[in-house]
Length: 632
Image (tube, rainbow, N blue to C red; front, side, top):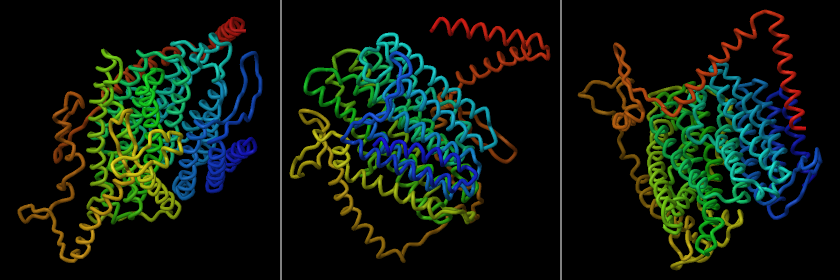
């Protein structure tokens, strides 16, 4: 495994160095991700230290692999393989060097994060990932301020992690993960917030609204799936070992449930073809955070029922992370394929992907969207069912505020699932299966793009049907049983004693037979089906008179106008509704303050006087010297 690690890292570095030839660069990224997959498989049942390099007393560079890091490395490597192959074709549309450099080095940073065994090493990977993910946003050439907002949130995340590990060092004399139990509540709060910010949990998602429509599609996929996955891994790594704190765990649960609700609400009103999936990231990661909080709340309770529930909640968080990583990667690949072929930005403009672009991206949009909508037997359905089942068992928690807040989280999560289903129907109905009105697509390279989409479509369907195999693979066979004629291990039980059960495999079998009959009947009478245009009093409908995606969500935008801050925009010939994400207002306020401070500082320091420059340098030198002596 030591050799595999160094080969993987070397392949990513070579890929970055080959950026003058983007196709070759991405192929090295593919090779690196493939080696990372092999490393993950080797590490599933075998823990091993790869590197231990001492720096100072209690501080070292430490790399190793165990079951948890191998599991998340498996998810990362599959996404990396698919995105690298997809980008080989995509690089002909976006040949900028910074894209391929950022791709390879950001994945190298994520590899270091997953294999780090101490806070210092994790921070090296964390900052590497953040900086080079930021570089991948720059080829858009527009809206640089939104890219820098992403970077600002990334650096806030890094600072919180740095402060958290500094607290751990103060308490334990080391930042090794083996000593996490010696951390304080302050350590837990700071580090958790650092990881939560990287997951784009509301209200830390404010940067995405202005940038997701502009950045390249492979960049959007990386930011939304692998990068946020690192935040999930951080929580899964830190929370079980850190000291338990029920009030903070309850805050995590409510924050996650609210983020899920808010992401679903904003996805409903989104009209850009990449902004809707971006908001579904806020929603899905909110559900993952809720599951992690429920796990943390129950993990150290002593009863058998609570121990079982804690294992079930952790399994739910991992299944949701798996579902989100694969489905979101597929969704950005498919909508990106359609967007580039049509050269459009909005959902209305991207209509008719099935007939205008191709069946593979259309099916990719459908399968990914249905997985996010909890449609059985796709794996997203199983993950969201597991989360709801955990919330339904809130009566098992200690009575009082814990049960009340868990019930509130359940309500918000249920609303989020309904809202995201509403949003995904809009995406499916207007893009994948919408009437294209004769729009012509631009020929683009697509062989590898189609291949990667087909593989991910298969994984989402097979993962849902074969959920028992995944549950055993990730290490939770105790959750599987048999019941009512269904043999073990095809039944997933949510509680002990049994509270709720599900068998995705048998659901798939039943759905197949129930859908087969009407399908064959439809095929046998297909020639008798007649399609007509919408009736408009005998007058042909103009393009702008067709029912639009904005009209689809207009009623909800009007009813919730105080939440959306809905306003009507008028012109001589058209009227439309515009909505606002009010949670971005605090960030905009802080941005204006920082700009004012920066402008004032520039006027004082950057005034063209050499004496001011020399004074500035001397002051910084003295401050740096004082701080260095204080911490030495």
